[in-house]
Amino acid sequence: MASIIFYPDKEKNEKSLLLLSFTFNHARLRLSTGLHVPKNDWDQEAQKAKPAKDYSEVNTRLRETANFFLDKYDELFPKGKKLTKEEVEEKSAEMVNAFKVFTGRKKALDATRISLLSFFVIFQQRYKNKISPGHLMQYTSLKKQLEAFQTKKEFRVDFETIGKDFYIQFTDYLKEIGLKPNSIGSYIKILKRLMNEANEDKLTSNQDHKKRDFRVIMEDVDTVYLNENEIKALYEMPIELSAHRIIRDIFIINCYTGLRHSDWSKVSNEHIHEGNLYVRTKKTNEPVILPIKPLVLEILKRYGTLQVPPIRQTNDAMKLIGKKANDEKISKGDLKKWLVIRTHTARRSFATNAYLAGIPMRDIMQITGHRTTESFLRYIRVTKLETAQKLKDHPFFS
Image 1 (cartoon, rainbow, N blue to C red):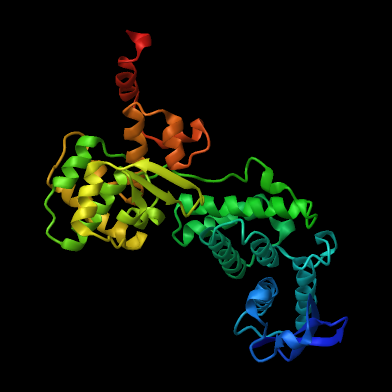
Image 2 (cartoon, rainbow, N blue to C red; image 1 turned 90 degrees about the horizontal axis):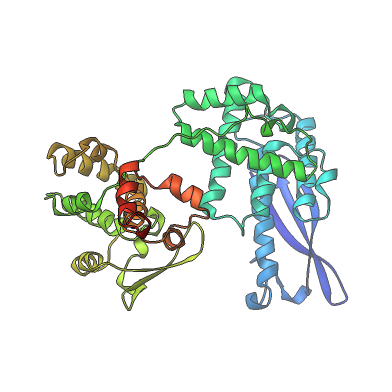
């Protein structure tokens, strides 16, 4: 078990320096937090400064410090693993060193004991207000995969070992445990960013991750989109199970809004004003305003408040709905596309149909969040024939 306690030092100039005592594995660290409060404003039992409204920054920093030590402890002292006294002392020194970097009292250049795995915590604390919680969780997931890989394959993972051999063995390992190319690619992309950050911090001079062989693997998935006729056919398809019928209708709504699944729940009457939907997207934290089609209002009126299921549950339902659409041959053309529709198909359908309808790319990109026309054009699914049909009525070809 590990525990942390904050307490004030002797008062000087009407303020006391807050100290911390971190106890773990029969060892104890006593360190300064660098924070000061008047002794009378410190609540030892509550472990916070009061009144809270006057010390919100101090109390927030204390919580961050406590989380730092507890996370660091979980990283350095895995459950069930016995360590010698010397190993405990070494890891204690690493913890102190990392804390000095975390508080800015020591430059990363001096932090020679920081390992790649311990750098995850520093990176996450550094960017916790700049990267979404969901994205930060991917770093935690990668760290767990690296730890498991290190144990099972007996390959030491650290800054200097990240190279071609690591890349081959780690990606092979991820394939062995059943991960798909895009998941593997996401992990490699995150690792490359961590290594770039470590290079900037002078923690390592290894730059093998920048070589051509250390590439991000990506597989083009969910490449289908539904055209207007197919969306209409899906909407009119009878579905007996009410839970699936609701998910189908939510999917239809988002074929006309282009939002990510994480924002689907924001399509509600309270976010619609004078015919426009106003939302702030979760992933980019940017505002989006778009006109709402009458069909969307019709669906919202029918249900009132829509409860959007988690993405896995939604995709499981879409898989069954798509199979029914395929079996019943509800549309012309390629019926196999129905077998691969998922939540993201709605967003891709919106972008592609809007483009084919002649809406300027820049306007669509304001909604989808794409930064460049190149990335947008790779995202949408437009055939050469569809492009020709779109251009046919352009004045240039008249």
